[in-house]
Structure formats: structure tokens, C-alpha cells
Length: 81
Figure 1 (spheres, rainbow, N blue to C red):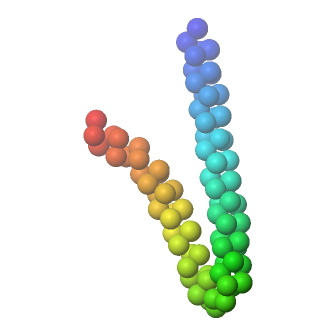
Figure 2: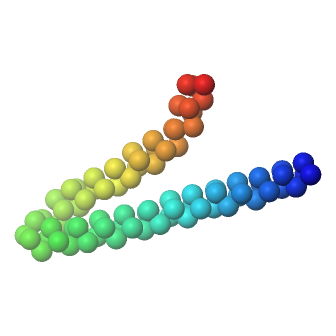
């Protein structure tokens, strides 16, 4: 009985990790598409390409901050316990 529980927990943990990795990859692709579309719209409105890239870089900065806050969350929870 205990072995079945351990195997079941392992399978569920593996599925959770794979889902999180898939979510991270999907977020990266969506971010890339959003940045490119945003840059194109800014360039269409007459902004210089370099300035449009600099502004759209904030999308990546926000994604990195969000990712780092999620990876630091478990260590914060451990400190509170």
C-alpha cells in the first residue's frame, strides 16, 4: 500500500513539474510574440526601431521578475515556518 502511494506521488510530482516547464516555455513564446507585435506597432507610428526595442524590453524585464519571484517563493515559505 505504501509503495503504491509513493509511486502515485512520484507520478503526480512529475506531471506537475512537466506542466510548469510547459507553462514557462509557453510564457516565453507568448512574450516574444507580444514584444515583436508591440515593436511593429510602435515603428508603424513613427518611432525609431532602437527606441521601440528599448521600450519593449520592459516585457522581458517583467517576465524575469515574475519568474524570479515564483522561484523564490518556496524559500520564503520555509523561512516563515
